[in-house]
Length: 384
Ligand SMILES: [Zn+2]
Picture 1 (spheres, helix red, strand yellow):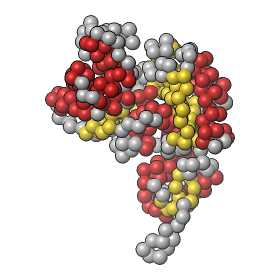
Picture 2 (tube, protein in one colour):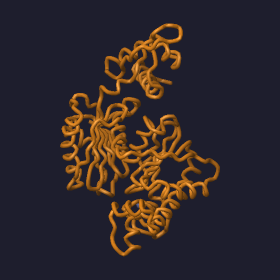
Picture 3 (tube, rainbow, N blue to C red):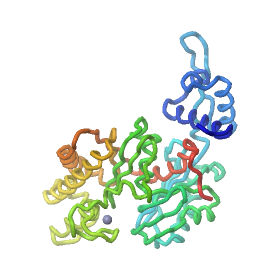
Picture 4 (cartoon, protein in one colour):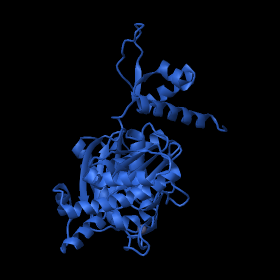
């Protein structure tokens, strides 16, 4: 590997931080044994990370030979990340520690989805989140924003978001100018996958898929420990695979996409058509909970449809597991049962396990993880 002293220093920092993230507190001597670094190198890096308030010494535990090695751990509490998930009419906001544990959450309504409207709403939310958690602005290490659409995370540019009518928008730079903090952006499903990779079901997997079913359908691929973005930030767009040629109009402008035939807005509209009266999401959820036949049939059809295309994705990428999230996980087995059955029917060889991982704050935590992951991955630098 070519490189200089500062690259190897950065690599050693990342090595130690990721080891502690995966294992929890470990003593300096054990760190040297596990990493293969010299004890002097470990001491050097650990001292530096403690000075940066990224590591902290925890209480010593007496080992079997009577020694009391002092474990070092990530100083999760010392730094804060802000996460914002942009929706059509609202923004999910969260303030987290470095482990993406929420310290404050709120939802703020947005009247207009222009970039300026979104940026203003984010700017207004920051002091409110800090006040809710009783924390100070100087502890913020970064801001992550997740956007539905195609994003170039390295340049901080939203390539397109049909939902908001944004094209080639340097959103990270625009926001960073207003809030004076480093800003990272990514597609919302990739953000969800990053949170899963750092501290969720994907933590111990090098290859996995994160599937999100909600207002849209998306799938993020983690290959060899990294999010696979593709050459145009458009990898994993499971929701825009054609499922019915010339079918329903999708928000992308094409017809017959999977999300136009299986995401929540379709399911709710379809129920409205069947009963001859428009339905809201609340009505649909209540009817699903009551086990109403028409709704059960719609969930079954949508689940089967998603499962069939998910099988193709597994046949192409062979992930170890599939983590499923998004609002539609709320429908449980009524949706996921048919999805699994249909996927299994069309699988070629691998049989990856489906793990659901969903709490209401998952989306916003994913956005915050865009910022925290910069601590664990020094290859990516922020805009601003
Ligand atoms: Zn589409």
